[in-house]
Length: 577
Image (cartoon, rainbow, N blue to C red; front, side, top):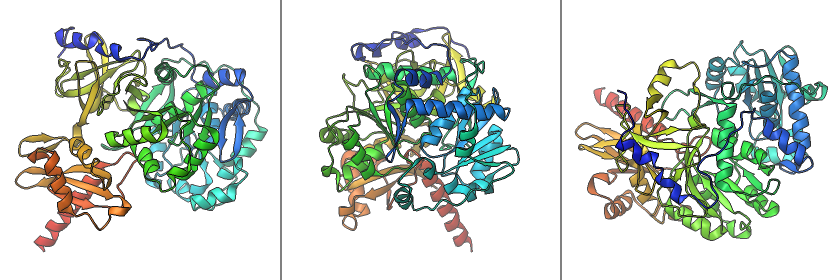
């Protein structure tokens, strides 16, 4: 039902969070209506000789990156690719990714990055869903790409790590991979050969920034079949400007970004690749996450900005060689994609001297919507406050109604970074968007509340709430306590089906190396009893060597839940026999 502005909405409309903003951070940002690729053009014009991409010893300047992207745009235009066409990227972080990404946008086409961990089935599904005409693929995964390649793809452009890397042998040793020879002929061509013969495209593709889709970004699939969020040039540029306003990093051309987050994920793409290019930063680029390599480079290149996920910060803190490296050049570190345990944040700040702040976002919002103040008050357990030009509120899960501040409901977002919609999913769009109080709101699927100072707190995912004896149990409450246990490295909690109680909480735990074999299930349960209400205490604990995760390190509760259901089904089948 429709709702006029009411006392409930006015509590958010007053924007109590503005008092928490660091000095100099504006309430609103101005987003120019221009194509996203202009951020590369501007940085290349002003800082042509500054290193844009540092890739295991290989350096690519802004002038070289822009020139290569222009050539890539030229080869696409010569193939008849332009506005409305999709170019898919099956690439890890690399110079090729940046070249193909910006080159696709310069040509007027839409880019659709793919997770390089995808199976042939997942490759096939995404390429059919987005209708990609061109695929740029890494040769290391030749066989599964070919197995998943649909006939609808007109051309496959193959590249390899070795194309831009002098020390290829050492890296391939780390990757434990030997690049197979890619096919040639027919629809198959080679990236470097194509680029060398292409003419730069310097024309105007006629982009409409607010309506033309720059990127089709697929959701992680943690709650079902992945859907493509249509992110326009305006959406992505807005989020880059919002992040820049929040960070207040000063003049361009000085920062060094740690590029460990995968760029095929929206978090790494916006916060590292696009934000780094916008700031004319040097981006330390990694094809895979390797803790010691990252620590070495932070020390060597005096990295200043690090966007990561909790598991990355945990891995650094737990690395046996951490004390050998000076990480104190880091100034601003942001953690997203999963809850940041308080103990991890405090220890990381002690070790590095950097500010480590928890933020929040989702694919559908390009992704950043909330961050804790960098210099001001960061509240433990909070995702922070809305970034400039962003309205956030809490809505009823069942109805299009805004709830009063302080009440718990579904977090909803309105702002220039909110997607155009889901690609070819009209029914999903009707579910995820609603209009209220003169605004178009996006439902996030996260249960949250806002405190009296405008800080927001994620209680849990709507689909992850555990129903136990009539109580609503939020896994995050339990996980936060488990992470405080001195022997627990990683933890995840799910609801396991139960014939009497509907569900019971079960904890999956990864122990630190020195604690393995010394801590029992009963020890963990007893610890939980001392720190949690009785109905929240896990009834079962399972020790694991690792936990299933997304490409950016977000623990997949869904996978654990599916495993438990299969176990129960198998047990029931055995009993029936």
